[in-house]
Image (cartoon, rainbow, N blue to C red):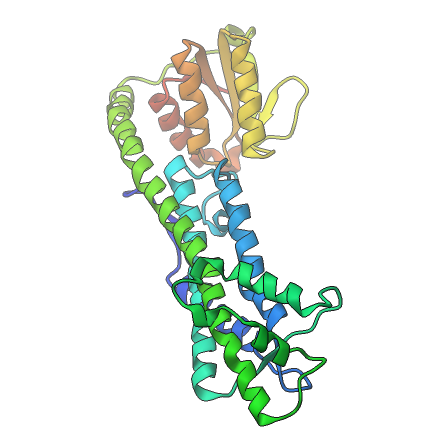
Length: 345
Protein backbone atom coordinates (compact mmCIF):
# COMPACT_ATOMS: atom_id res chain seq x y z
CA UNK A 1 0.00 0.00 0.00
CA UNK A 2 1.30 3.42 -0.96
CA UNK A 3 0.20 7.01 -0.44
CA UNK A 4 -0.38 9.17 -3.48
CA UNK A 5 1.02 12.54 -2.50
CA UNK A 6 -0.98 14.36 -5.15
CA UNK A 7 -4.45 13.02 -4.40
CA UNK A 8 -3.74 12.21 -0.74
CA UNK A 9 -5.32 8.83 -1.38
CA UNK A 10 -4.13 5.41 -0.32
CA UNK A 11 -3.44 2.84 -3.02
CA UNK A 12 -3.75 -0.88 -2.38
CA UNK A 13 -2.52 -3.68 -4.67
CA UNK A 14 -5.09 -4.79 -7.24
CA UNK A 15 -4.59 -8.48 -6.49
CA UNK A 16 -6.28 -8.17 -3.09
CA UNK A 17 -9.70 -8.83 -4.67
CA UNK A 18 -8.91 -12.10 -6.52
CA UNK A 19 -6.84 -13.24 -3.54
CA UNK A 20 -9.78 -12.72 -1.15
CA UNK A 21 -12.11 -14.61 -3.51
CA UNK A 22 -9.58 -17.41 -3.91
CA UNK A 23 -9.25 -17.81 -0.15
CA UNK A 24 -13.05 -17.94 0.11
CA UNK A 25 -13.17 -20.63 -2.57
CA UNK A 26 -10.55 -22.66 -0.71
CA UNK A 27 -12.52 -22.46 2.54
CA UNK A 28 -15.76 -23.28 0.76
CA UNK A 29 -14.29 -26.32 -0.96
CA UNK A 30 -12.62 -27.55 2.23
CA UNK A 31 -15.77 -27.18 4.34
CA UNK A 32 -17.86 -29.06 1.77
CA UNK A 33 -15.69 -32.17 1.92
CA UNK A 34 -17.65 -35.28 2.74
CA UNK A 35 -17.19 -37.02 6.05
CA UNK A 36 -16.54 -40.73 6.31
CA UNK A 37 -20.27 -41.51 6.13
CA UNK A 38 -20.79 -39.48 2.96
CA UNK A 39 -22.47 -36.35 4.37
CA UNK A 40 -21.56 -32.75 5.15
CA UNK A 41 -22.15 -31.56 8.72
CA UNK A 42 -24.70 -28.79 8.23
CA UNK A 43 -24.28 -27.33 11.74
CA UNK A 44 -20.53 -26.95 11.34
CA UNK A 45 -21.04 -25.53 7.87
CA UNK A 46 -23.47 -22.91 9.17
CA UNK A 47 -21.00 -21.93 11.90
CA UNK A 48 -18.19 -21.39 9.37
CA UNK A 49 -20.27 -19.68 6.70
CA UNK A 50 -22.70 -17.62 8.75
CA UNK A 51 -22.16 -17.75 12.51
CA UNK A 52 -18.53 -16.64 12.71
CA UNK A 53 -18.86 -14.06 9.89
CA UNK A 54 -21.89 -12.55 11.66
CA UNK A 55 -19.91 -12.32 14.89
CA UNK A 56 -17.07 -10.67 12.96
CA UNK A 57 -19.48 -8.12 11.47
CA UNK A 58 -20.79 -7.23 14.92
CA UNK A 59 -17.24 -6.80 16.24
CA UNK A 60 -16.35 -4.66 13.23
CA UNK A 61 -19.40 -2.51 13.88
CA UNK A 62 -18.27 -2.00 17.46
CA UNK A 63 -14.77 -0.98 16.35
CA UNK A 64 -16.23 1.54 13.93
CA UNK A 65 -17.62 3.50 16.84
CA UNK A 66 -14.01 4.36 17.60
CA UNK A 67 -12.01 4.05 14.37
CA UNK A 68 -8.38 3.23 15.01
CA UNK A 69 -5.47 2.07 12.93
CA UNK A 70 -6.75 -0.90 10.84
CA UNK A 71 -4.37 -3.80 10.45
CA UNK A 72 -4.40 -3.18 6.70
CA UNK A 73 -2.38 -0.03 7.39
CA UNK A 74 0.56 -2.24 8.37
CA UNK A 75 1.03 -3.04 4.67
CA UNK A 76 1.72 0.63 4.04
CA UNK A 77 5.03 1.82 2.70
CA UNK A 78 4.74 4.79 5.03
CA UNK A 79 6.82 5.00 8.24
CA UNK A 80 5.71 2.72 11.06
CA UNK A 81 4.49 5.72 12.98
CA UNK A 82 2.29 6.91 10.12
CA UNK A 83 -1.32 7.38 11.25
CA UNK A 84 -4.11 7.49 8.63
CA UNK A 85 -6.16 10.64 8.49
CA UNK A 86 -9.83 10.49 9.44
CA UNK A 87 -11.16 9.87 5.93
CA UNK A 88 -8.31 7.41 5.25
CA UNK A 89 -9.29 5.40 8.32
CA UNK A 90 -12.84 5.06 6.99
CA UNK A 91 -11.49 4.21 3.56
CA UNK A 92 -9.30 1.43 4.98
CA UNK A 93 -12.23 0.06 6.98
CA UNK A 94 -14.32 0.06 3.80
CA UNK A 95 -11.58 -1.88 2.00
CA UNK A 96 -11.47 -4.46 4.79
CA UNK A 97 -15.21 -5.02 4.54
CA UNK A 98 -15.05 -5.22 0.75
CA UNK A 99 -12.39 -7.91 1.14
CA UNK A 100 -14.77 -9.89 3.35
CA UNK A 101 -17.48 -9.49 0.70
CA UNK A 102 -15.20 -10.95 -1.95
CA UNK A 103 -14.26 -13.71 0.49
CA UNK A 104 -17.95 -14.55 0.94
CA UNK A 105 -18.50 -14.45 -2.83
CA UNK A 106 -15.74 -17.03 -3.20
CA UNK A 107 -17.55 -19.35 -0.78
CA UNK A 108 -20.82 -18.83 -2.63
CA UNK A 109 -19.20 -19.50 -6.01
CA UNK A 110 -17.76 -22.84 -4.87
CA UNK A 111 -21.08 -23.76 -3.30
CA UNK A 112 -22.93 -23.06 -6.56
CA UNK A 113 -20.40 -25.03 -8.61
CA UNK A 114 -20.62 -28.06 -6.35
CA UNK A 115 -24.42 -27.93 -6.40
CA UNK A 116 -24.27 -28.04 -10.19
CA UNK A 117 -21.49 -30.60 -10.58
CA UNK A 118 -21.97 -32.94 -7.62
CA UNK A 119 -24.62 -34.45 -5.38
CA UNK A 120 -24.26 -32.90 -1.95
CA UNK A 121 -25.83 -34.66 1.02
CA UNK A 122 -26.11 -32.94 4.39
CA UNK A 123 -26.61 -34.24 7.88
CA UNK A 124 -26.47 -33.10 11.48
CA UNK A 125 -25.64 -34.48 14.89
CA UNK A 126 -25.22 -32.86 18.29
CA UNK A 127 -24.35 -34.02 21.78
CA UNK A 128 -26.19 -31.13 23.44
CA UNK A 129 -29.20 -30.82 21.12
CA UNK A 130 -30.62 -34.26 21.77
CA UNK A 131 -34.19 -33.47 20.82
CA UNK A 132 -35.12 -32.98 17.20
CA UNK A 133 -37.58 -30.27 18.24
CA UNK A 134 -34.75 -28.08 19.55
CA UNK A 135 -32.97 -28.23 16.18
CA UNK A 136 -36.23 -27.43 14.41
CA UNK A 137 -36.83 -24.36 16.55
CA UNK A 138 -33.24 -23.21 16.12
CA UNK A 139 -33.27 -23.48 12.33
CA UNK A 140 -36.68 -21.82 12.06
CA UNK A 141 -35.46 -18.95 14.22
CA UNK A 142 -32.36 -18.55 12.06
CA UNK A 143 -34.57 -18.65 8.94
CA UNK A 144 -36.81 -15.82 10.11
CA UNK A 145 -35.23 -13.12 7.81
CA UNK A 146 -36.33 -15.03 4.68
CA UNK A 147 -39.17 -17.27 5.87
CA UNK A 148 -41.79 -15.33 3.89
CA UNK A 149 -39.62 -14.73 0.81
CA UNK A 150 -38.46 -18.32 0.30
CA UNK A 151 -40.39 -20.84 2.43
CA UNK A 152 -38.45 -23.72 0.84
CA UNK A 153 -35.29 -22.41 2.53
CA UNK A 154 -36.81 -23.03 5.98
CA UNK A 155 -35.98 -26.60 7.17
CA UNK A 156 -39.03 -28.58 8.22
CA UNK A 157 -39.43 -31.44 10.66
CA UNK A 158 -39.16 -34.09 7.95
CA UNK A 159 -35.84 -32.80 6.64
CA UNK A 160 -34.37 -32.61 10.13
CA UNK A 161 -35.52 -36.10 11.01
CA UNK A 162 -34.18 -37.68 7.82
CA UNK A 163 -30.82 -35.93 7.96
CA UNK A 164 -29.86 -36.78 11.54
CA UNK A 165 -26.63 -38.81 11.57
CA UNK A 166 -27.88 -41.27 14.17
CA UNK A 167 -30.97 -42.21 12.15
CA UNK A 168 -29.99 -41.70 8.53
CA UNK A 169 -29.87 -44.82 6.37
CA UNK A 170 -27.50 -45.44 3.48
CA UNK A 171 -30.19 -45.32 0.82
CA UNK A 172 -30.06 -43.16 -2.26
CA UNK A 173 -33.61 -41.91 -1.69
CA UNK A 174 -32.87 -40.61 1.77
CA UNK A 175 -29.51 -39.17 0.70
CA UNK A 176 -31.25 -37.26 -2.07
CA UNK A 177 -33.74 -35.82 0.42
CA UNK A 178 -30.97 -34.61 2.71
CA UNK A 179 -29.76 -32.30 -0.05
CA UNK A 180 -32.72 -30.07 0.83
CA UNK A 181 -30.50 -28.19 3.26
CA UNK A 182 -28.84 -26.20 0.48
CA UNK A 183 -31.46 -23.38 0.29
CA UNK A 184 -31.10 -22.80 4.04
CA UNK A 185 -27.31 -22.65 3.75
CA UNK A 186 -27.46 -20.36 0.72
CA UNK A 187 -29.76 -17.87 2.45
CA UNK A 188 -27.68 -18.03 5.63
CA UNK A 189 -24.57 -17.18 3.61
CA UNK A 190 -26.40 -14.25 2.04
CA UNK A 191 -28.14 -12.83 5.12
CA UNK A 192 -25.55 -13.47 7.83
CA UNK A 193 -22.32 -13.15 5.85
CA UNK A 194 -22.57 -11.09 2.66
CA UNK A 195 -25.29 -8.54 3.45
CA UNK A 196 -23.89 -7.35 6.82
CA UNK A 197 -20.43 -6.90 5.33
CA UNK A 198 -21.88 -5.15 2.30
CA UNK A 199 -23.78 -2.75 4.55
CA UNK A 200 -20.64 -2.03 6.60
CA UNK A 201 -18.57 -1.49 3.45
CA UNK A 202 -21.09 0.97 2.00
CA UNK A 203 -21.36 2.80 5.32
CA UNK A 204 -17.57 3.15 5.64
CA UNK A 205 -17.31 4.26 2.01
CA UNK A 206 -19.99 6.90 2.65
CA UNK A 207 -18.18 8.10 5.77
CA UNK A 208 -14.93 8.35 3.83
CA UNK A 209 -16.53 10.40 1.05
CA UNK A 210 -18.39 12.56 3.57
CA UNK A 211 -15.30 13.45 5.61
CA UNK A 212 -12.89 13.85 2.71
CA UNK A 213 -14.30 17.13 1.32
CA UNK A 214 -13.93 18.70 4.76
CA UNK A 215 -10.28 17.71 4.90
CA UNK A 216 -9.71 18.96 1.37
CA UNK A 217 -11.12 22.37 2.37
CA UNK A 218 -8.82 22.47 5.36
CA UNK A 219 -5.86 21.59 3.18
CA UNK A 220 -6.80 24.27 0.69
CA UNK A 221 -7.17 26.87 3.42
CA UNK A 222 -3.79 26.03 4.93
CA UNK A 223 -2.05 25.69 1.60
CA UNK A 224 -1.29 29.39 1.53
CA UNK A 225 0.29 29.30 4.98
CA UNK A 226 3.34 27.19 4.02
CA UNK A 227 3.75 29.25 0.87
CA UNK A 228 3.78 32.49 2.81
CA UNK A 229 6.03 31.19 5.53
CA UNK A 230 8.40 29.55 3.05
CA UNK A 231 9.06 32.94 1.51
CA UNK A 232 10.20 34.29 4.90
CA UNK A 233 13.65 33.72 6.26
CA UNK A 234 14.16 30.87 8.70
CA UNK A 235 14.32 32.26 12.23
CA UNK A 236 17.36 30.94 14.10
CA UNK A 237 17.66 30.90 17.84
CA UNK A 238 19.94 29.71 20.61
CA UNK A 239 19.34 27.18 23.33
CA UNK A 240 19.69 29.87 26.00
CA UNK A 241 16.43 31.45 24.83
CA UNK A 242 14.53 28.17 25.43
CA UNK A 243 15.69 27.21 28.90
CA UNK A 244 12.13 27.51 30.25
CA UNK A 245 10.55 25.58 27.36
CA UNK A 246 8.84 22.23 27.75
CA UNK A 247 11.08 19.73 25.97
CA UNK A 248 9.54 17.18 23.62
CA UNK A 249 11.41 14.60 21.61
CA UNK A 250 10.11 12.60 18.71
CA UNK A 251 11.32 9.09 17.81
CA UNK A 252 14.32 9.40 20.11
CA UNK A 253 15.21 7.19 23.10
CA UNK A 254 13.07 7.93 26.15
CA UNK A 255 14.42 10.57 28.49
CA UNK A 256 13.29 11.67 31.94
CA UNK A 257 13.72 15.33 31.05
CA UNK A 258 11.42 15.28 28.03
CA UNK A 259 8.07 13.96 26.84
CA UNK A 260 8.93 11.29 24.29
CA UNK A 261 6.60 10.82 21.33
CA UNK A 262 6.74 8.46 18.40
CA UNK A 263 7.68 5.33 20.35
CA UNK A 264 4.31 4.23 21.71
CA UNK A 265 0.82 3.90 20.27
CA UNK A 266 -0.41 6.99 18.44
CA UNK A 267 -3.46 7.35 20.67
CA UNK A 268 -1.31 7.24 23.80
CA UNK A 269 1.01 9.88 22.39
CA UNK A 270 -1.94 12.05 21.39
CA UNK A 271 -3.37 11.84 24.92
CA UNK A 272 0.01 12.65 26.47
CA UNK A 273 0.45 15.68 24.22
CA UNK A 274 -3.07 16.86 25.04
CA UNK A 275 -2.26 16.61 28.74
CA UNK A 276 0.87 18.71 28.18
CA UNK A 277 -1.09 21.41 26.37
CA UNK A 278 -3.55 21.48 29.26
CA UNK A 279 -0.74 22.80 31.46
CA UNK A 280 -0.54 25.89 29.22
CA UNK A 281 3.21 25.93 28.50
CA UNK A 282 4.61 29.15 27.03
CA UNK A 283 7.27 27.45 24.91
CA UNK A 284 7.72 24.04 23.30
CA UNK A 285 11.11 22.80 22.16
CA UNK A 286 10.89 19.89 19.71
CA UNK A 287 13.98 17.67 19.55
CA UNK A 288 13.93 15.45 16.46
CA UNK A 289 16.41 13.08 14.76
CA UNK A 290 17.72 14.14 11.38
CA UNK A 291 17.61 10.52 10.22
CA UNK A 292 13.80 10.71 10.15
CA UNK A 293 11.54 12.64 7.85
CA UNK A 294 8.79 15.04 8.99
CA UNK A 295 5.35 13.42 9.19
CA UNK A 296 1.78 14.64 9.45
CA UNK A 297 1.51 13.83 13.17
CA UNK A 298 4.12 16.44 14.04
CA UNK A 299 2.38 19.02 11.89
CA UNK A 300 -0.97 18.31 13.57
CA UNK A 301 0.47 18.60 17.09
CA UNK A 302 2.35 21.77 16.22
CA UNK A 303 -0.80 23.28 14.73
CA UNK A 304 -2.67 22.61 17.98
CA UNK A 305 0.05 24.35 19.98
CA UNK A 306 0.18 27.24 17.50
CA UNK A 307 -3.57 27.83 17.90
CA UNK A 308 -2.98 28.30 21.63
CA UNK A 309 -0.27 30.90 20.97
CA UNK A 310 2.57 28.69 22.20
CA UNK A 311 6.03 29.55 20.83
CA UNK A 312 7.82 26.56 19.31
CA UNK A 313 11.33 25.74 18.16
CA UNK A 314 12.88 22.78 16.36
CA UNK A 315 16.08 21.22 17.70
CA UNK A 316 17.66 18.90 15.13
CA UNK A 317 19.87 16.03 16.30
CA UNK A 318 22.18 15.14 13.46
CA UNK A 319 25.64 13.89 12.49
CA UNK A 320 27.68 13.87 9.30
CA UNK A 321 25.98 10.73 7.96
CA UNK A 322 22.51 12.28 7.84
CA UNK A 323 23.28 15.96 7.33
CA UNK A 324 21.44 15.83 4.00
CA UNK A 325 18.11 15.64 5.89
CA UNK A 326 18.67 19.08 7.37
CA UNK A 327 17.19 20.82 4.33
CA UNK A 328 13.87 18.98 4.62
CA UNK A 329 13.63 19.77 8.32
CA UNK A 330 14.42 23.43 7.64
CA UNK A 331 11.63 23.58 5.08
CA UNK A 332 9.34 21.92 7.60
CA UNK A 333 10.30 24.44 10.29
CA UNK A 334 9.55 27.36 7.96
CA UNK A 335 6.19 25.88 6.99
CA UNK A 336 5.22 25.31 10.62
CA UNK A 337 6.55 28.73 11.74
CA UNK A 338 9.13 27.21 14.08
CA UNK A 339 12.33 28.76 15.31
CA UNK A 340 15.42 26.81 14.22
CA UNK A 341 17.87 25.54 16.82
CA UNK A 342 20.63 23.09 16.03
CA UNK A 343 22.32 20.82 18.54
CA UNK A 344 25.58 22.74 18.46
CA UNK A 345 23.92 26.15 18.70
